[in-house]
Length: 368
Image (cartoon, rainbow, N blue to C red; front, side, top):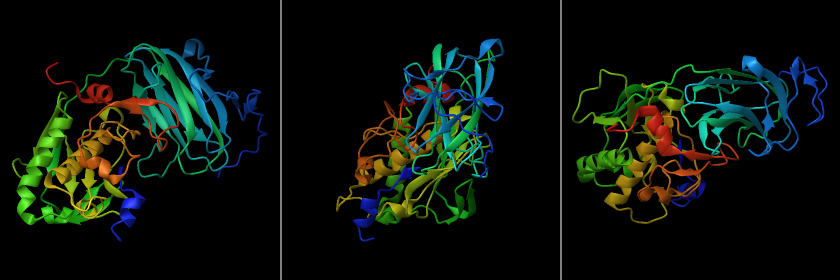
């Protein structure tokens, strides 16, 4: 989701309760049938709790998020490319709405999950990945979803399958649908009736429509240069018969410029979609006059951002980064790029994201 800031919106006037006793943090013990391994102070990678998986490479344990600011990091030991890792986190008490993430020794995020069910019918996170990154220590992080103030106990099942096989990246087709339509479904987002895109939707003259579409497409291609991503559009191409992502244009949203249907780790689903809320752009910027090129950059950056989510990327906190969500609306009026930068607190309180590396693992690098 590429957010609209509250300031910019205003400027234009516009339980399951466990009956078992809770052990004190860091004292060991059990919660139910699971050993309590959540050590006091395990909120940094250097102080992560070591999980002794033994010869079976499987372990069940429990822990607790005591406050909304609590972070629990667990050292999974050494993993190598091709190892399959499953981390299943389930609430056992309280109102905990947890998130889970996997990091490597560089503190780079590899996978993130908030809810195992995209429709939010199950808020417990679950991660199931095959490691693509360098051999070395990996970490499982657990925290409360940002802004929920939720707390409680959880239990975790960690399972590792060595040498499960390293998947090959598969190129991605992205289809820009400028034509609109009725009853367009974007899973987990909504159902929309959309008119064909017109530059008037974003506060510009209709005479700029074709040029604006062309420039947006150029910008998206620039952002994904070097990756196996093919861009097609409804003006010049039929709807692809192969699996593809569709980006729709139209409608309005008071909170966001755009929404992708989910964060798709390593691009597991090649047919997921996103929508760009074009009516949200007019008057959303602090600058009184937004030029043609600035509006094209805003739209192109947003398309690239949402496609990034559909390739597994999460939000970061750097104004120049395409996955940024921390800066004001005007930050998207200029070129942004995929970078290695710190995670936004809304994702996880620690760690970094190497966006170019993750995209390459998902879709492959062109010419390689």
